Image (cartoon, rainbow, N blue to C red):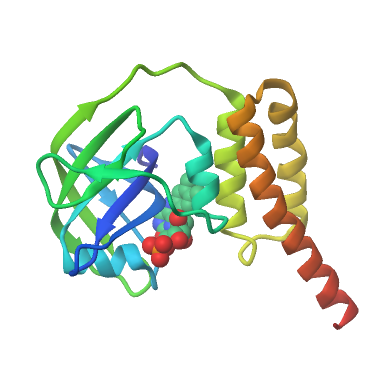
Length: 194
Ligand SMILES: Cc1cc2nc3c(=O)[nH]c(=O)nc-3n(C[C@H](O)[C@H](O)[C@H](O)COP(=O)(O)O)c2cc1C
């Protein structure tokens, strides 16, 4: 399996409006592949404007926020390509689409890094950040995964939160748990036939 790096991807539509979404970039030699499932704004934007920025953030609230309807995070213009990146990030890549590999479910946009910058120091691994990342991914797959798998993983991830979270990780976890609560309620409503 190729290595995948979880980033915040910003793309632009033809009118110059920025769109932000967490996506896993797939390593492919010197290239990075953006693979959005259909339908997606990221996909539409990459077809309209073949550039993207990948921001590497240590603030997991951005990731949790994006999957819980909190998409307003400060952006700043990119340096070498048309676009925007997270204003507060550890580093970022500016990407140009070099090839599109079409697929009925998940086209792949093969990108080259045309510019990269580092903005601040990396503060090391934190288990709670990894737990937030995992739960954020799980909440985008409620419809694909058996409920028991989600509940089992949640129980395990909670350990890292209770032992190692700081305020940002706690806040991100709370947002995700609101989404989990809504999902549990929807399962209950379905079982009650309401
Ligand atoms: C860490 C993380 C990685 C993700 N990676 C992908 C991905 O590679 N492809 C994808 O389609 N969605 C991915 N998602 C889900 C997207 O962020 C989500 O579906 C998003 O809304 C994309 O659709 P949009 O471009 O219309 O906003 C990921 C979510 C998280 C939290």
